[in-house]
Length: 314
Length: 316
Image (cartoon, rainbow over all chains, first blue to last red; front, top):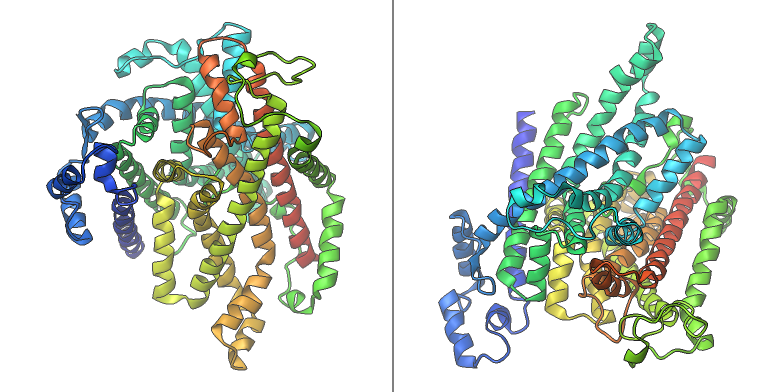
């Protein structure tokens, strides 16, 4: 187990190294280099050369890399000239708001997805199962932004039940003070995630229902309720826990589109605005943070799987 | 949008409950290619949902590529006099915010969506298959390192990567295909590598080594063809995913540049007006439904194809 942890962590470190190299290499993809993106097309070659020197982009790649990593370790993710703000402070300002959105979406989708997935597995191949399977299929063929648009069309335009945009405001308090405006973004986000969880829960419960321990429990006279909730349910949840760790890229994508559709002032919207403004420092800083989170999520998923399932031997 | 490499809900099968008979390794060797296709098609044809999807898809393709020859609209020049006109006999689905006929736009946008979807899927699956098969076959530290590269690529949330690439390249259709493929091949590589790990222990692959065949021969002539079921199924899903990613980028205004369009780009026009609370339903329903229909069709077909290939193995 300890050996596995060490090996898995070393792997994660190697992945981290590769990712940072990729990310820094992305900077140099910008047409004319990162400085041209910063100064705009009308900057003179001299200005570009001076800035290149100032920012150290004229040095060899490995020198740039070492300096860049040093800056990151000191908590400096760069400076957005367009927003006149450090990337770190931008993240500090927007991350909590995005976390609220993701947490709400996750909670709502899990609250529906887990019980309904369980229901589907127990009542498999019935009308209820087919209907829910149909909804899940719909869920992952539908772009999340279209779900958002539909909800706006139905609940904000056809009937004026909820506002068509998310709560506006720079602070977390301002977001939470307008719960009515949070309903549609949360619902749209939760719908696409629901498709995932219910599908996994269904298959996970079905896997567990044919295991020997279920037969043993039944043979010992345990009631069907006890078998289901005491044995199958708990073991099936394990798959979901692991999946949560792996689902970060999906969560990021969902949050970004939801924030753009509902004009929700979080990291996704800030990233989108940075993309429109070619604000490469913000783009790279945010990408790096999201990537770090994904690597940690994957690591936790693997470790939790090994911890939760004693049958897994590494 | 469920693009989660290594954790795709479409990979789930219902096999365990029915306790399928264990497949025998001899089954693969005894198989003859021609009868395999026939058998696969028979299983596929039993699935009514898949047949309906196939028919639907043929209709969508005809609609997009033949439609413009029957239903003539100007999709190059804007016509502000018609901007946002509601559906009428002249414009069955109304006009968008710069006066393009929405029905005609749906055809033109669909061409881009389908072309990019197919091409990106094929490019991604081709490179992913070669990389994965090579990595899995070589094994050892090389495999380990090659897979860490894949891990690293997959750790970057794909949406951020494709947005950055779109910002950098101002894509046209061809570049768009590569932007999508650049991240999508990673998931394919991981999947095919897993498949290769099981295939390379099979006797017929071992036999190539024994009789002095090269590694390249093992990979190209034996491993890849035997993983072809997985690969074809993956390609089908990849088309759906590529269409969704393209739609996402188009929606953000970072997709193909105007006057070209795709279904996602059409939706972005609707958003502006909806946030002000006005009712222009014809800006969102047509394109949105087109995306969903197409992706569902590909997913159903992929599902049926997987059953076709798997049942083939089980029945023998």
